[in-house]
Length: 176
Image (cartoon, rainbow, N blue to C red; front, side, top):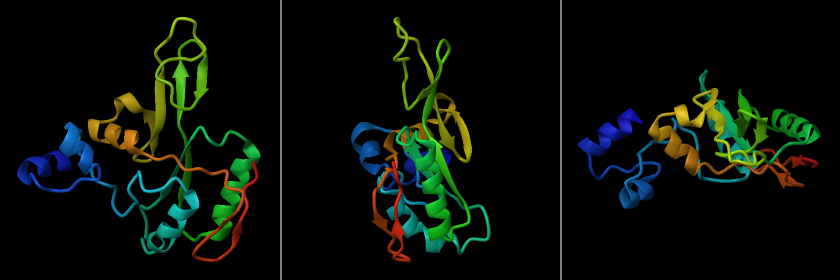
C-alpha cells in the first residue's frame, strides 16, 4: 500500500490493481500481491488453481494460494472433499481455505461478513475477520490499501458439482 501511494504521487499515470476505483472515485491504490491473480479475477476456485498451479510450483518458498470462501462452505464434509480434491489434483505447495466471519460482543461467532449483528435487537457493532498477509485479523485494523483489496475480493464458489481441471483433466466432484 505504501509503495502504491508513493508510485501514485511519483508516476501519476501508473496502473494499479484497482485502477478504475482509484481514477474515478479516489480509492486507495494497491497492487496485486506478487504473481497472484488479481483478487477480483474469478469466483471459480478450480480456475484459480489451474492458472496458479504450474507457476507456484516454480517457487522455492513463500508462495500460497488463498481460497477466500466467505461463508459459502459451512458443511464439514464439503470442506474435507474440497481439501482432498485440491491435494490430489494439484501440485502447488501450499493453499489455505479462508472463511470470512464476524464476532459480536453478545452473540460471538457469526458466519460471513456482518458489520452489525443480525441477531441483536439493537444493532450491535461487530468485528469482521479475514486473512491478510497470512494472518486472520480484524479487517478494520488493516491498512487502507488492504481494506480496498478486501472490498474487491471475489469469494470462491467451492460447491461445484463437477469441474474438470485444465491441467490434469481429472474429474473434480465436491458434494454439498
